[in-house]
Length: 573
Ligand code: SF4
Figure (cartoon, rainbow, N blue to C red):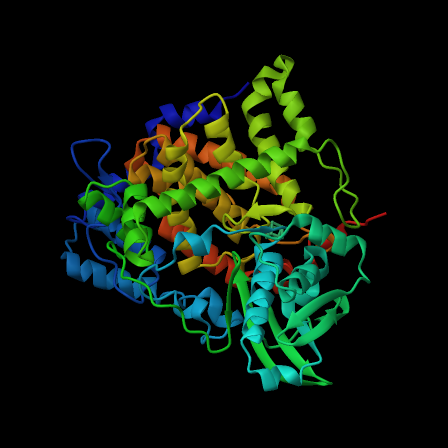
């Protein structure tokens, strides 16, 4: 059998990249496509030795510059670096018009989530890792937090205003309207109006609502008593020019007119804001960063791990003590382990909704324990753990956004595998992993999106996988560069992934996708902890920018609308 790859490696004439490099560098002083190298092989800097001029097609510039250099060698012509760069710029032509940020086409610039993309990252852990009912952070936890917020506001209204009230209504728009049914948005919205908080709601309360959709529930606001039901949550226009794809309004009604109303947005990850929202005042980060490059520079200059840097910033921005922050991280890690355990305890049940999907975490887990399948063991275990937490999400039970509900199987699988599996890592290690994972999630939120409705599934499972890869690299003692490389690799191999939940339910492809996200995180961390870190050629910031650009370019049909992809092609019998 022919082995063309071997020939390619052995025959110097096939070593195209090196050959091109040496021709280019011979003819052209310093600038070339060559990388700067030092004596140590593991200290290769990807910096070019000549700056690429602004507003020039970068790729074409590099190629033209190398070609001019090669031609110079052959013709004996000499160029000064400036003249050569000028000529290359002329030949390369203008840069492709830079892509507008993801949000500029789909969201109002007035939203805080858009404004926050400027300046340093200011997100804190309690905003990021949230416990709440599945199946979706943007369509379940976000709406429930929103209606709970509205409930609290109504409680504070003056008695005379409340005296005119006759009921409450919620209107869902955009993606919330298009796929809210499959996400339990109406149940979550009603539960919030009834004063239930996502982190403490009994999932049975939501299960009962599903089983008794016509039931009315009493609500007391001031001296007024109302009865609310699912009919008070209205699936309004799915299409329109909304400030955010996940827009909703809450209204306190006086007859058929609203006497108090507020427009809200659920931008993913369980975050929410409202029209005119002003973010709460926070402290300034000790190590301000808006990119991985900046974060890593702080870490390297100060000899800190990513987890240590994140802890220092968390203390500075949140005003909490390390002890309080660790207590919160322990709570999150334990909740992740609990969700996996509960998920594994269900033996082949049928998940809610029209797909009639059977759970399979327990079966996959059982097989993973069988020595007959020794070679499948690790992959089978990690997959089963991710399926377990993700199936819990599909049941509408409590999950942890990391970063979203749809992706809530990925990180718990890794936390469980490393702390409860053969490695038995102490829970203190999980704190470090969660901090490193948060760094990746924050950057994706800051510079791209965490919402399937804005960026497709790459923003949910892709980010979860990147966070989990960072978790693994961090707990294995990886340097900041290794943590970055792990996250980059995992995210890179989810780029372009669309969001097309069948029948609007976060089940197909979401549940299995969590297993793939967890396994890919593991692969990414294994590669990153074994390669020479500085040889990794793709940096995380570039991949996050690509995530944003790809999300912006992606057809709206593939962004949690259930109008295309599997959702359009799969026929449910
Ligand atoms: S396909 Fe991905 S982004 Fe879409 S709902 Fe499922 S998990 Fe979320």
